[in-house]
Image 1: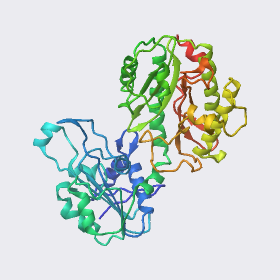
Image 2 (image 1 turned 30 degrees about the vertical axis):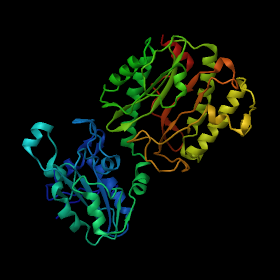
Image 3 (image 1 turned 180 degrees about the vertical axis):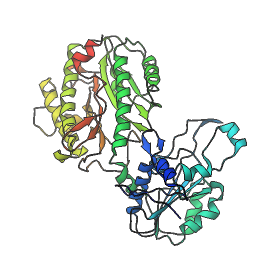
Image 4 (image 1 turned 90 degrees about the vertical axis):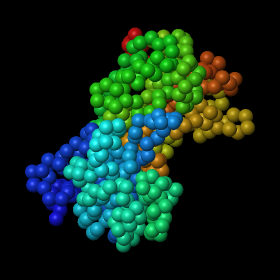
Length: 461
């Protein structure tokens, strides 16, 4: 018999018999930083509602990745697996099977490693089968080494399997070939999960806000200091992102001095920082596996030159305009915000004397008919952000923004050393990026602690 507590969101606890007090305590257990067992159960419930009768969602944990030989990278769970389970260990499978029409009508089974004191002496502790039920709220837990014999019975009678496990995947427990041998109809799972993950809960937004707050303060602190080497600035950011509860950097940062800022994803971070140049930093920390994405550009000397200031203010003007559009009642998508960014940059650059462009033109064409905006602004103005820095891959940027969407807004201008452009701007690169939570009537900027006004940046020195 399963005991069920009904809350406003009709999520469930799905353990074997416990006292009511124990169920209540378990349900509000914080499984990962900021996210409770109740929220994970609610996510599984919403996924089950989207499945057809007797549909099954099947997910595999991420593999441990090796850098070389026996040297491995820090483990990072597959984002969809993490989103639905909160379980942070490899060699695991999650099975969510719809059993009826209601929000509580599903079974959650978790395959994982049983406790093994001898192995844990080498590798550190892991959860085991009891914790899979008592902490992670699985209805049933199974030894992952027995998946090949147990999983077929769990899938018997399924109408369709929704999974992103490739047929070639042999870990855990030879799962890819096993699924292929069952000959059940399958469909991709990520489309269903993306729809859920794209709209962030208040707890998710709070986690991203904390990541943004700490990350922004670290970047502002970096602006106060003189730097002569990209690698030293990189190291300072990495250290700062491990403080105040953050687990570390969310991605390899861009620390690009001078014209290297024109390389959009420059991550070598090994060159000098000339005193008369700017440095473009794209960096952010992670909290509870949620990230925020920030880019700031500032003068290495602490004071902008006239050309640097003019180009910076042009980008900042457009960035403010685009952030203001991140609200549900504007009814716009990221693609539409991108078009607004292109138009805004054309107008600003025309005012700065970039020839061949007048405010209001749709294209700025050079020799051969190319659109020079593709040269100066070659990337999209934004992307979704959440558990991944480029979150929910495959979820369209043509979708109208709704409350709970979290996106980046990052217009930039990268001027090559090309005679088509004003000489005093050549080699300059400016990108300004914030992470923004969309609300009904306005944007909620998650990264305001990273200063971006010219006056504020120069006042730091």
